[in-house]
Length: 443
Image (cartoon, rainbow, N blue to C red; front, side, top):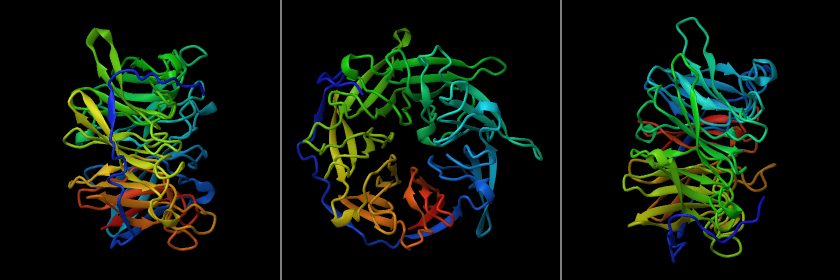
């Protein structure tokens, strides 16, 4: 990757002098109970899917929808539904990718879905499509007795060999998603593409569905446009759309240090969109005490504070952090909320790879890929689900609680908070066939 300069575009940001002030206490005490709702690869040749990596969504009836990166009828991933049926859950595959020649219908859906008011699902795949760089799709809900039908909204790298329109898209979002409103099926969809664009550093894009016509696709920002990628490089995370139309996101690389950024994109009318760098990571010490490589998105509370994770940096080079960006006048103040591996053997978790959720009390609920129980092949731990409140991190569940890891391993998705207070997520490994699980935690 290109060498980064010390130039930062946009808003100046103040890093907290007490960057680990909140990283004081971690506790293993928890009364939480984990229940496995489903173990993947329960069917022959993993026809039911394997290795879920995207998050879950829930409709008003309590049905869960998600994706698997592998498995399905054609072994290239699937969309699934998990429905409550009394005290049990009923599982079905709604669509298996790579049903078309050369996987024109997509391959490897790594992202969570969104749901519209009519019950249709929308998402992206990382591969497949015309140039094997992914598609954005709509999965149309069927009439009774019919099958779900996939409609390609956009196939990436459609503009010349250099993928000027971007490739390998992130999850889709829309204005109002953060508030819980369902997508209306007509408003713009926003996302980021990990690669391509005019500068080769990825893109942010907008898709405007057009009923009966070709969807309108537009690039709203090309990353890597500033010298040495000072405006960020490789935006792999989902965007957060605010009520005012502003978008927030992260890049894995680039910025003033080359270790990633948190950024804002604001519409400027006919002048297009303007990017502002909110923070460039790895400004604190040789092992990036303030965090390194923010591969997850950000979430926001009612005061406009942004929260996210870095998979590296913190208390050690590869430990990871939870961080906060607090608006302070015309600036944002950055601070580390928690540095993982603060406890012996990283029993408090290591490597948070997804954005934490905010519960109604403002507590952070998240997961880590590693840390926790160090058993079998998981020498660095099988991951944890945690809650952070009032300066204290509590491990709600450490995976591989048993040697066979039937409770799951390597939690891979954002935690879904249900209206009744349960926490639901997925693991990419473990379970009955070691191909991942859907789990529920009751507090």
